Length: 330
Image (cartoon, rainbow, N blue to C red; front, side, top):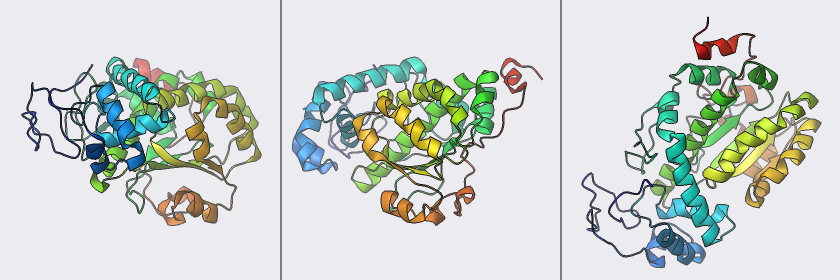
């Protein structure tokens, strides 16, 4: 589902007519990508042959849907370098994007990019201009009481920087007011923003770039443990449908309970995801730079930095009655 006609060679821009700069026209049957072509697109040589096999297995035709070589490399890495498993994840992700309606989710939560009904990007993959701007009642509530977002400024290497205020979220209030579905849709928009901004950066740099995720766990208490099923369900979306979005997950200002929570969540993560996580306490500047390559100045002001955090959810306490806004109540 969602496949576009015409096959484009790696890095070759697609025109609106469906013809690539290499001369592959709409409706024609083009040759499969070779390992050499895949390597030229930025895939490491030791993975190029397998990614070429993956491209053939999923019928990749051009950069969409999620079918440029560097994005296929994400699927390949996410499934332990198993071509068959990567192809299955790819097909499941493409179908899920259509059925969940990524198009509607992204329109509810921001502006700047268009999608087709089947979840395929309607604009060039080489750029990403989407900006968080909640438009529906659910999206506005998720922004106020949610805890995640992407910083405007990327890392020095050009990768997106994501911030989660996981310790500040009012999980009890979100559940009480029935806001978990709205929060989940906002989280899907966040993951899509992270994936597409990473894809655009990768195509610009000619190599795989993944986001740096900083998790502020200050405020996590033992009471949060009872909301683990909700966190597990949300995290599962990334595991199944968004391949290798992050290069590292640095947990900062972690209280002792953060280690307990991670131990409970760890079985839900892939081995690759588990390898990326590093937990730090209050004095985290040195460890942050060593693990993520980010300086303290690159972080938002609430973490001691100077970055603009406008797009990061505010994680405000959820007042009684907030959920009535979803049904038109006052």
